[in-house]
View (tube, rainbow over the protein chains, first blue to last red):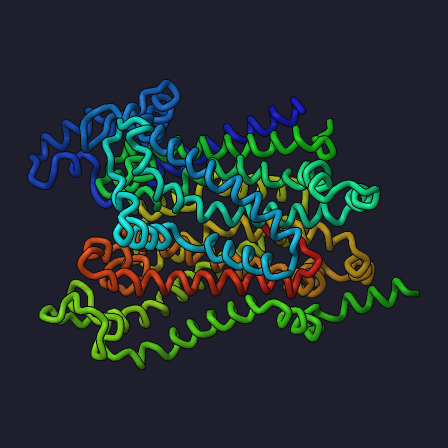
Length: 315
Length: 296
């Protein structure tokens, strides 16, 4: 197990390194020069040259990369080109907001998805299964901006139950932010719900075929006991993985949802950074998302191994 | 003897030739039929629609801007007085072409990589698969945004990015099937006959991968539509005045309160297509891979 963990950890470092290369390289090929962008097109040639020197843009690319990567590891994430303030507090604050949204979404869609998945599995190929599978299939593929805007149209503008716009102050507390979080959380949940439902359904169907379930059934245990003690304990394994992986995936999915609602999270921040060509902002927030994504994937694998002794990685 | 017969059967007959039970399975799931119907409907519109569209999709008519749906403008008009019905119709070609080409690219290269990687094994397999893992460990939308940010948004670049992003998933699925197949007896037999690697890969193994590849392609297609639409919505994909549905929805947000139809029709078109492709791909899986091998 330790060797496995070590290997996975080394792989994560490799991933982060390559991802940082991709992100750094991608942010080099801009239409125009960074110094020029900051100062605007009417700046004098000397002013642009001075700023270029100050930002280290005249140095070779690999030195620039090392400076940036080294700074990032030490916690110096650079200065925003637009607001001229350090990037780190902004990114961390937005990360907190995204986390609030993500946790709320998880609390909605994980329990609901498990219940729906189990029902679908028990009624396999009958009407409830066809309905649940069909509807969840529809929502998995539905882009968040479509479902989000439909929710706004019906629940916010039509029924006025919730605010249509969630562009709250970035430092709002959870209690104050709550009403603004409901619609975005539902939007994110709709996509996640389908995954959980499908995983739970297929996991449960697999377990229902097992001999020990038959045995439990035949020895006269009540159906709900068979379900909880024998089926769910085994069938929810894949679901646990999906939930852990979902945390990283949520952060990716939040990009669109947060933009739809104007919610001040990390996803909205990246879109804003790209629109304003704010390189340090894009770099730092992308790296954070990649890091969370990789670590939650690792958590998923480790959790799966811990919960399922049968597949524990051998020496 | 029995083994020998099986061997010949597996080697000679492609899985697609036994279509009868496949169609019987198709009829058992009404969702699948609905899915196929929707997809073919959109393909039909994409092919013939633009000639039937009542207006040019770029034709502006400012006095008639933000008109609600009427006999003249079935879906109403947008902020420039352009006919939304015509734009949605022409946009169907855009979506299917961009997402379709991206998917085709991903499936083609993913298949090649998966075949070679799975068949050769060794260090080549190790390097390729770790590289695929790295790409998979970055959220696709984020990676697409960062790459498009540097390449610049255009239709071709969106296709390239979509194609590139989904290679690893296809490669992984193909590789796992190859690993299973290459120890089978019909491959062994071909090798003993003295066939070369190329022959074995493309004449013996590839036909047996086809059902998996078809299911995988249909799933990637639904992901691609999702990604292309999201990029369009964020303004990072296909650029105006192109009638990309995601882009139309993004632009329509400003007019949401005055004119909801500007948003509803392109959003509805995305929803319908995505649901159709989802049902189709789920149905394909049930038809072609009844054993229930998960492609997730």
